[in-house]
Amino acid sequence: MANQITNIPGIGDKTAEILAAHGFKTVSAIARSTVEKLSSVPGFGPSRSGVIIAAAIALLDEPARQPQPTAATAKAKKAAGGTGARAKAAAGKKMAEKKAIWTEKRDQKTADADSGEKSRQAKLKKKQQSKEKARKEKLKKEKQRKEKARKEKLRKEKQRKEKARKEKLRKEKQRKEKARKEKSRKKKK
Image (cartoon, rainbow, N blue to C red; front, side, top):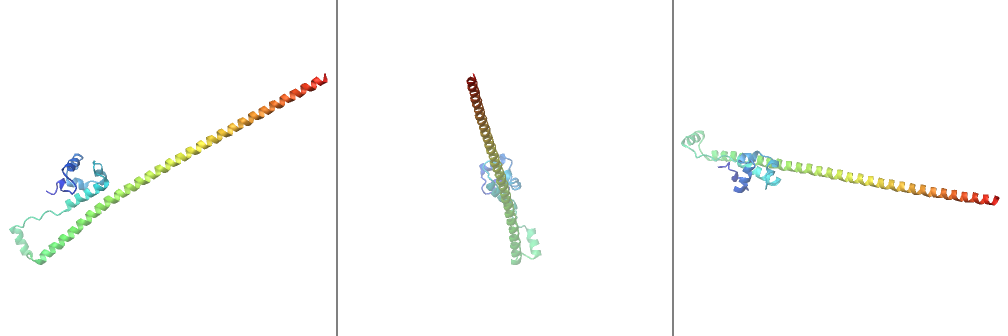
């Protein structure tokens, strides 16, 4: 029975139970699945999922076992030219061509799964890079804002001190002027 899930290499009874619990009960269900869907099952990463899907596809693409020839098929073969060496060679050639096509399909599906995973990883990496860039830009702006606020605070402090110094000098000058006027008034008396 080629449609049993445990016929897929790498799938045992326990793994089959886990897959069945997540909706993958047949080989064809796994073969039709995507790497992302199969990766959601515990114990299945993207690489294992791709391998399992490719194995399921290969298992489905396997030709059905040839039935034992009956008397009617033997007569049909004999009428078509017998079961000679040429007929066997032609059948072998057809089988080799079919195997090559199956292998090519399997390889293509595996390559598609791998390229899909690579493009997903590239998108994820690009997204992470843009997030990191935005984070750095935010930190840079925050640092600039703090530096600007610090400089503004220093400038205001310097202005306040300069204003206080000028006020002190003005008062000192007024006090001296008042004392000088007082002294000159005393002299006049």
